[in-house]
Image 1: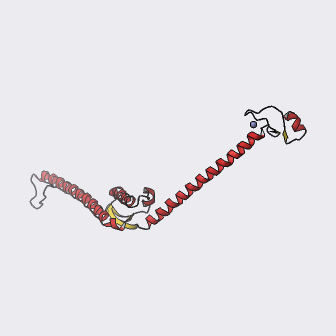
Image 2 (image 1 turned 90 degrees about the horizontal axis):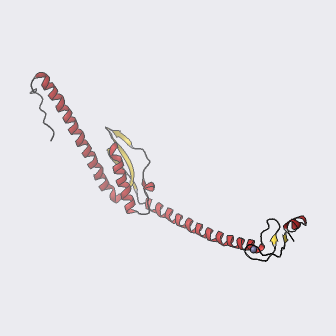
Image 3 (image 1 turned 180 degrees about the horizontal axis):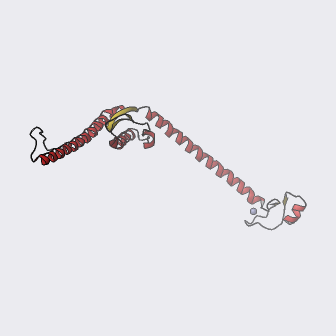
Length: 188
Ligand SMILES: [Zn+2]
């Protein structure tokens, strides 16, 4: 019997008596001409694969949930600290804070810790920045912020001194001598 005849006769399956590609001598489905033994195997394999895949997906889901819970627990240990630095120094201080958090709680990643909150209280090129930090690290981060602030202020002061000195020297040139009333020392 061939497939054409089976179709005409509206049979679900038919039998050719010839082996399929895999060597099965079995009935074939009229709908697609496939050997029923081959189809049976495919279905069984798909079932196993599906099971393995869903087990893997479940394990992955469980793992992600555990990481999520561990992250939430770690975040509970952190507080929001406020540190004033020059705007240019914020990335350095922020990365220091993030590094400290991730060192204390290795489950945390940069994206979990990094603050997206805008700075507050801008003043003279500085701002009060907010970041998460472990309470144990607040002091050392505060010292770092203060050092950054002091370092840049020092640079700014010497720049201002240099500018004043230049101005004074220019005045002195115009007058042919250094005015006695202005006593400026060269910055070290
Ligand atoms: Zn077959």
